[in-house]
Length: 332
Image (cartoon, rainbow, N blue to C red; front, side, top):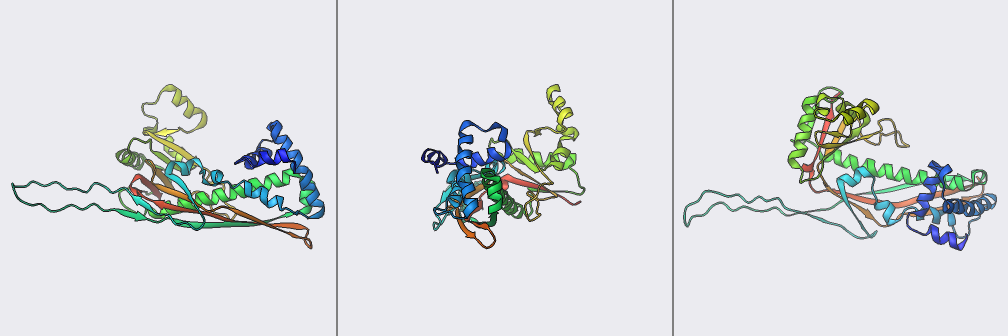
């Protein structure tokens, strides 16, 4: 590969930026993107002719997309909920939770004693996930699509891992919210004034100055913004926004984030659970990236394809303050 272009592609996150540009905005490629495409196209099509990749440039290209920055950089949703950190593959990690002030004060008499108060210091360990994916790239497809085939594969692999990561973290959050004052139940299938007001009030009570966020499938977010309480006191400009797009960005001082209730993972599972609405008033824990992602490749001459295996994608999740999170469960 061209030395100058190789140096550019070694820049953190550059390969992924290029691949995303090729897949999603091919008409807007920069001059540098076009140069990367031309150089990549040349060696990729040669690979498609022979199946021979002496220096395993294909797997190296995929691995470059999983830099510490891109793996640790969470989606906006995860960034709202968790602080992030990274450790080595064989390192351990513990989180010391800031203790709550449990000192009790009593009425007393001079020289007397009162019951002692104790502060509970907790040390928590993350729950780890180790994800892996395997795929094949046909030599025929490489010859036909050239750099586009590689760019599409890179984007698809990265999106699959990121969506799986978000799904796993939300599953942990869902289980952590097992019951109590921060779990609300809707008897029907749509948001109601009563429960939404209770949710917003709870978030305002536990926030330390952060703007709370409520997120779930679009059908629940749209349902919330259609409530009379959502539109109370808004300016004409905000009301016009609702009339144009059918939803608002805020509810009772809380930011609203809607996610697709149709888009699914490759296994058919939804990215965000149905019959759930989640919320948080600040950071509730940490997500820790562990080790580095590795990519392996092997040419299968008999089937004229290249076997790709991406592994080592590991992260841990620890919830340190579940009181700052809440959820609504819909019974229908």
